[in-house]
Structure formats: structure tokens, C-alpha cells
Image (cartoon, rainbow, N blue to C red):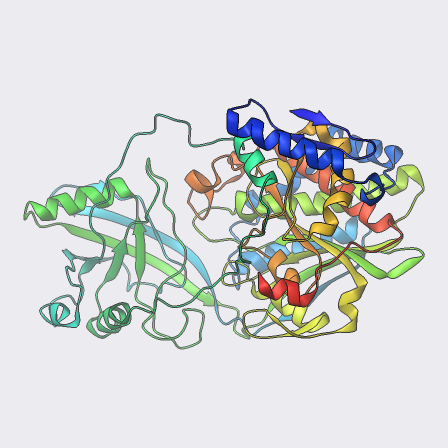
Length: 541
């Protein structure tokens, strides 16, 4: 990393150089040298507080123990499920035990019914026996004990082609996908963000369009026709394989329905299963050879959450001279169901709980309290559409449309200095996505300065999407997701059966909690709230 310090400002970019990198570097140097120092941030960073934060975050960390409770004991945490309720109770009692203030649940909804898996097994019984690696999709109903049936590949792309299967698939296991080629890994599936990618992020001139969770229906008429047909014909189960994953890793989420959502009361759901690619391909090749295949399956599940309502977890550390102003930090607490929800998002929840613990210990050691109120939020319903955080914003800060966009801002929104979110797996923090907020860049540059040795260095003007900071950003509140090392998030753990505690990287989670604790603290101590974008500017993105 090369660093240039023109006066009181600083600019940096990674090495090694190619000619394009060198040209970019000279441009960066010129801009740094030509930028008047009077407009560069001069944040008051407390070395004493950062030293204590490092002590409690790096040397006396409890983040892995917190994560073990969330995953090993109380995972998975599917929204609406019994396990989520148990995890919520544990988190509330833990936060109260740490002496956080105003620890409470905030109800939102209706979400609909929850779902809990009680038992599942799938076997190939002919032409030869083998146990099948597979997982039911969430909200799949129970079978009537152990069922057995023939496997059929439903080869249709139109209503006319579907017609030839009418009356022929009841009680059968239906394959919807073709074979997917599997290639061996010659490079490790886990990786760090390299200097080239950090430089690309740092050099983004304009934010990319703000990306929310669309969660839209297929829009393809045949897809709707297909699922209506399947519901009418009543197969034993619909079987697919995900678009990625191998070596027994299965990526699985929620069931499809012909109408409505699977969470909706009284909506009919067909049992649905996602199979490991190796076993799916083997069965498909047998069918291509015109060799009949028979499966047996037992699925026991039950629907939960009869009132349809869900809850976010809120806790606070009170402020002193600016108690009505708030610095928020949070992560989503819910997960999918095929594993224990470790990297998505036990990691983020454990880190943010650890941030609260670190700050309490830092206050205890220093005798210094935050100026603004610090508010921890653990959201539910994120996986189905940012439901929990959007409901919170709608209740407290803005009237919004169904997609979370601001219609009318409440005065209380101005009291929120900023919101920090963590939800990209177990990887260490490498910087911050600024969400197009150019004015906050100099502030965050000073916040990051003490953590050069922990490799948190990069600011990117660009947006990033897909998680709860968007609920706040959409209504003009400064809200940020951190740049993280991907590790094996997309290749192995995100929404998969391998998303367990063993794939958490301890040193990375310690680093993340330490950096975020410093960001939260120094945001709380500023004379001014964080700079913010205008709503008009936000809606243009």
C-alpha cells in the first residue's frame, strides 16, 4: 500500500502497478495534492478510546462464544420459526445481563406463518440404493409418513407441452432442471479482496444504482402456468438443484407456490426439495438411459407463528448531552434453515452484539460515556425482503411505499446520525461503501486511519445492496454496509447447508467488531451529525 499525505489529507492506493494503475495513481496524487486542506476532515479521534476498544475487541473478545450460542444452540433462525423465538429470548436476556438499557422487542407484521423442520430423509431405492443429500425448501408441508414414487423429468416449456403430463405425475417425484456440469476446483473457493479490486472500488466515480431486494415473482407466464399445473396434479414432491454448489454443498431457500406466498395462511404448498448436484446429475443420467429411478422420502414439519407477527430486537446505551440523537448499528438476526445461519448472518449479529459489549467495557474502563444514544438493532424478516428493518423505518422515521422508498420523512429521521450494518459473511472489514455520500468520505477516512494495520483502508463511493442499510438509505438517513473479504461466502456458505460455526474466521470477526465499535463511538462524539444526502439525490440513484 502506497500512502501520500498532502498536508493534513491523505490518499492511498494499492500496489503493484501496471501502466493503467500507475496512470490512476498519478491522478489520485494530483487530486490529493490539489485539494485544499481546509475542506479535508479533521476528526477528533481518541487514541485512548481506540486503545481500549482494541483491548476488548482483539484481546478479550467474546465474539466467537456469542456466535456459538446463536448458531450451535439457537440455529437456524428462520423468520417465524420456534428456533428464532428461542434465539430472540436468549439475545434479550444476554443484552439485559450486559446492562444495556431499554432492551425490548418491537413487533412488526403481519409476516405470516412460520415453519419448523422436524425430520427429513431422502433415499434412492431403485435401481440401486443410496442415501440422497438433499434439503426440503422452507414451508414445505409434511408427507403422510414415508412415501415412495417414480422419478420423472418434466420436460416442458409451454402449456401445450405440459398437457401431455396431465394425469401422469400424481405421487411422482418431479425433476424440473437439466444436468448442470460440475467442474473441479483448481483454485481455492475462499479468497480475500485483492489490491486490484480495492483500487477499483476506491476509484468508482459515481454510485451504481441503489439496489434493493426486488423479491418479485417470476413474471414469466409459463412459470405461473407450471406451478398451477403442479398444484392441480399433486406430485409427491418437486425436486431441483441449485445453480451453484458441489461436493455436497446445497444452496436452498424457500418453496414456490402457484398463488400467494408460502408464508400466507391456507396457501397450498407442494413438498419441494433441493438436491446436491452430484446426486441430481446421477439420477438424471439414469433417466437418460431409460432406467427407472425410485425415491423414498419422509418429511415432517409444522407451521408456527399463528398470529403472523414478528419482532425486531432493540437495545441502547444512553447518550449524555445529546441523548435524543442516535447512532444505530445492526444486522439481520434471521437465517435460512439448511444449516445454522453462521455467516448469514450469525456473523453480523454476533459482531454487532460484541460491538455493544466492547463499548460498555470501554466506558467502564475510561469513565467516558457517549454523547449520543447508541442503539443496537437485530432485524428479522431480512431474508424475505428486508421486512423487519423496513417496518422499523416506517414506524419511526418515514412513510414509505411497499418497496421502502420515502413518501414523507418524519422529523425524527433527522435525529439519526447514522446507521452501520454488517451482512456479508465472516470476512474482515476492508473499508466502507459510501452509498454515494461524498461528504462523509473525509470523516470516514479519519475514522479508518487508526486501523491501517488491520487492513481497513478503502472508501468506495459506490452503492452496495441486498441488506438492511438500504431501508435507512432510502429515506435519507446516512446508512452504510462495510466492504468485507468474501472468504467463501458466495461459493460455500451463503444460504447453504455448510453455513455453520466452523466456517467463521475468528480473527476477522474480532477485527470487524473492533473497527465498527470505533466507528460507532466516534460518530457519537462528533459535534455534528454525519453528513447526509438529500432525498432527491437519493432517489436519483
